[in-house]
Length: 461
Ligand code: ADP
Ligand code: MG
Image 1 (cartoon, rainbow, N blue to C red):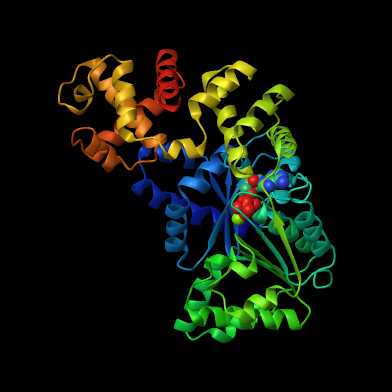
Image 2 (tube, rainbow, N blue to C red; image 1 turned 30 degrees about the vertical axis):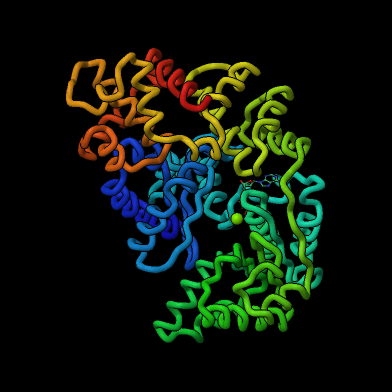
């Protein structure tokens, strides 16, 4: 175990070294510094992250860069999973803390309680620990998919085979796949979770390296195959052929196959007819977007997982405002909590409402033009916009410029180079420094916090 632990840790250290060179300093410091490589096998690399909010950030905004760095360091295809490392038994202390990790180093482990916690951590399966049946809120919208997934988890290969789940994004397909995975793995069955992109890559490299036999036996050996997002299976006929055979091998030998997609089999036009009709042999279940009541139940459950108490009126307020999907609902809750903690205010109806206005939803975010951010910053500090893009440099102008850099990077996810270009051709190091300075000072400097919040309110309202 120690070996697994320390080699994962070393691998992740090397990845962090790579990333540190590529990413803006503030981004690195904020989101990656307190992470730790926990375990890996031939398919997945698991990284412990201190908060759910950080998991969301890393998954959504940095996955590509991290994934690339992991594969580069490991020199093989590996999926990356982030896991919140808040363990009820460990007072929310992240695994990354050196005191905890050192327990595993050779030498006397005096605190057996800590050692035990470490062991539990190591033996946790590779599925996302938050994605369990218990954490899945059931409503009319997902009842069928949930029950079918449970039936499959109870008796793989017997109930519905294949099980085909489809829905729009962020409605719980991946969650249910992992939930099935947890149960089967805990029973000692071999479970393989792959995205169709991983499957495609794996297949293509097997052909390239002439290891298709290994490929086949790798897949043929599993009792449960969980294939996520089949709509992304490559359009190449050969890959489809590969999947067709894998599917048949498993299915005819009574192994369970669960497939998810963003549309029903009949609408998967890229798939060959014979594949499509095979998907229809089992059960097809869709998940609808949740109604208000289910959205409220989901928020209440997520708040409980975050260990925050939050009134029903506030839950209703958020659920009414955020409607698109569960991922966005969860994202809004995380942002509200993070924001209020940062600003040091209590969660009240008014503060939440203000934050919802100020932070906006993801879809609002995509409609914001960078020019309007520069404009709002300028008008907050009572300058013309060309002062911000110009060369003058008083203390106040420099501050306003840095606030603009900060908002463009953190709110619009622009690259430092793009931001530098927008702000009068400044180089990317200047932008990284400026945005980082604001990011570092915002939690200490009350005036700065209020300024940034006021500007955000202006931008997002
Ligand atoms: P999909 O794979 O359909 O895009 P995910 O499974 O990734 O969606 O779900 C997005 C987020 O929403 C995850 O964090 C998941 O835990 C959460 N989620 C989705 N549906 C539910 C539900 N019914 N109850 C609790 N959480 C849910
Ligand atoms: Mg998914």
